[in-house]
Image 1 (cartoon, helix red, strand yellow):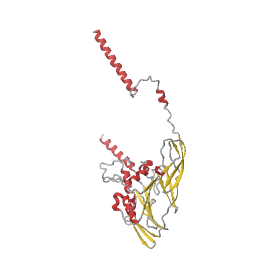
Image 2 (cartoon, rainbow, N blue to C red; image 1 turned 90 degrees about the horizontal axis):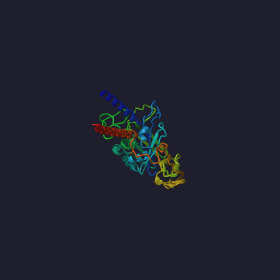
Image 3 (cartoon, rainbow, N blue to C red; image 1 turned 135 degrees about the vertical axis):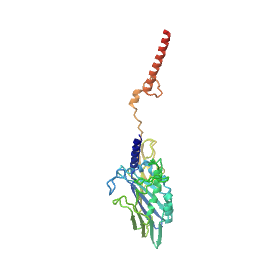
Image 4 (cartoon, rainbow, N blue to C red; image 1 turned 120 degrees about the horizontal axis):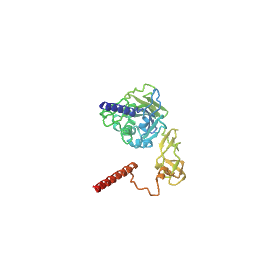
Length: 377
């Protein structure tokens, strides 16, 4: 018996190994500096789909879609909740199938390089002490910007660790006799209070700095090369010198294709995004919140025009609201119903009713037999 239990425990451990899977993904960031020495930072985390082919390898990613999509449409809001900096804009582009990547984009603006370092440390959370301050120096109308490669993981790690360690978001699986001191080969580390750590498989891939027409990119990982190799980023810096351009302004906004336009009465807004186009041609997406909309009303049927407002700009889309269909009655239930001549069984199953009835017959029969036996005596 003990041997069977040991085999069962070993099999369970292997299952958890597989369930934990490889949290494979890559991270890119871009910093842009403008002529007032303010800037914007964009971090893109690409999480591979379960069955998505991985460049340079003959295997797929594992169960990353399960990792990231546990919250479904609420993932965007959940990640925003875990990010300590309120000013970060987080957008999630869900993979359509388990062969597609999910992209998490974080964007925040800063007023100066000092403001950038301060905000980045807020995002880094418990890893703030590991942050290496980025620098900006001026020489006439030209500026030189420098940032440590080791900063990149600090811009997403704390947020993702909180997400994966929150039981409401992602169920925590215990592994081994001491879950607080285990390290397993797939990169998920059990240490202290942090059951999950993603420093290993979500790989800092590249950082770019753009100043006007000049840019510099540091590439730290090539997926076509040995995937087990991880470069030490402690001595790497990305640096660029250029003449900054003016900060671009919003030129237009538009509702992103694919937004739901068919609703039933009483339904809530199904969500959607707008695409923001800037004066320099760059674009950004952001989710449509209910406080950005007017005209969305599913209380009555008909075609409605919904207006979305953002930073003084407006765009519209149409929705059609139809009467909510009532579910068809269950034929089996109708057959069971009569004009009220079926006694109330208080929900007891048929077998219980029959058993009670049979028991009653036995008791009555037994009592009758005893009475008749006594009379004969």
